[in-house]
Length: 299
Image (cartoon, rainbow, N blue to C red; front, side):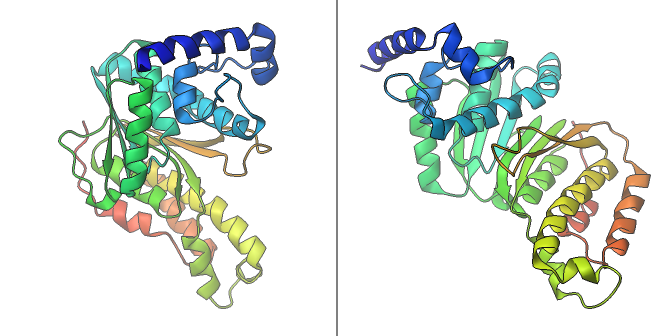
C-alpha cells in the first residue's frame, strides 16, 4: 500500500539524514527543500535512492531546483498575499522537477492554495509526470500535453515559469506570460541558437570578428539573447533582471531571468534593444516582434 510505503520511507530517510549529513550536503545554505523533510517528494522525483540517500549524480539537480525556487520565493510569496489560489504555469515542464517542487512549496512550505499546471509537448513525458505526482500525493497539480503556442487555458496564470526550455521555447514561455498578463515570469534559458544562426548569415561589418569565429559567436549570442529578453520584458511593462541561480560548477546553464509586472512599459528599454541590434550587425530576435504585436490585458 502506498500509505504504508510513505510511512516506512519517511522513517528511513529521517534516520539517514542526520544533521551532519544534511550540513555536508547543503553547507550553510538555507534551502527550502531538505531531503530529511520531504523524502517522498524527492523519491518520486527520482532523486533519492531506496535507502533514502542522494547519489552524487543527482546532487546537481537537487541544488538546481532548490536555488531556482529560492530565487523566485520573494515574488511567489507576494503572489500568495494577492491571490487565492495562486495559479502557476510551468512551461515546458519536462520531467517536472520544478513543477513538483512548487506544488510541495505551496502546500507544505507556505500552506497556501495553488493551482499548478505543468505543460510539455511530449505525451509520454506528461504521463510520467502524472505518475510521479500521484506517487507523491501532491495536491493542486495537473499536467497537460501541448505545444505552448497551441495551449488554451480556462483562466490565466499569475506566474509563468520555465526551466531550461531550449532556444526559442523560452521565448514561447515569455510570450505566453506577457499575453496572459502574468504578474511574475521566471525563466532559465537553454541552448540559445536563433541569434547565432542569424549572425552566421551576416557578412562584413564591425561585428564580423565575433560573427565569424564559431565559439565567440555562440557564446556572445547566448549572452546577448538574454540581454535582449530582459530589455524586451522591460519594454513590455515588467521590472526584469538576470542573475546566476546556481554555481557555474554545477551547470553552465545557470542564468535566471526574473520579471515582475510593473504596469509601466519602459520606453528607454525598447530604444536600448534597437540600439543593441544595430551595434551587433542588425539581427534581432523574433521575440521583439511577437511582443510588440500583443494586445495586453493585465490582471
